[in-house]
Length: 229
Image (cartoon, rainbow, N blue to C red; front, side, top):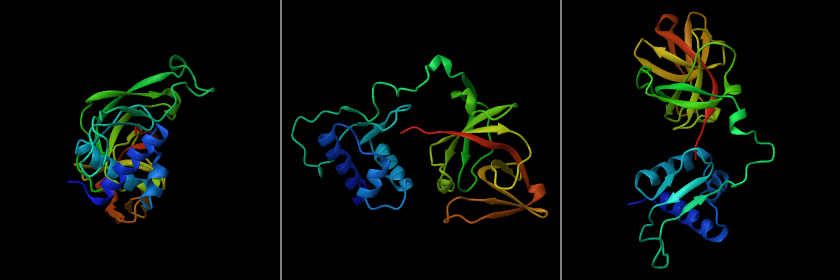
């Protein structure tokens, strides 16, 4: 059973694909559903994916595969799923060849909460390839998958992969991986206020959390972000 908004979005995507041959952009979906932010569209697409109506393809911009349609969508008989790719086949004129990008593999060391802290960073599970120029300065880097929406106003959505430069210090305003009381890891904006540490969300639905400075350990600073649609 789909909600009204989920059905409305699926119907809009289906209509645009039949008309234009490509799916609408996130901005177009946001305007069509009269939502205030693209994070709402992200949640609706995730819900449709979880319910088996669509599938997102990794490493392709605006690429969706329609798996099935509900009975509420009036389509001709004989409908078969087809791949919908919104990006062009030909690369942009100024695109660099893949072999010249200096791609680097980083360990993917688990999930990080952009919301209520969920778990400490785990051991490396697999690796992710990033452009070399994404890495900031020397030192070790690692990647984490973001869970939650507390940093959406900083452009960090649920499901994004963040690239972190390992370190134990941060400046006020940096977005950091913070280990709280040695067992909860979270992604937040760092502020030092006297002897206290404030971990600020970038979503008004979440409150700033204050800790003694001995309760928070900085484990790295955000230097890059990877997103798939």
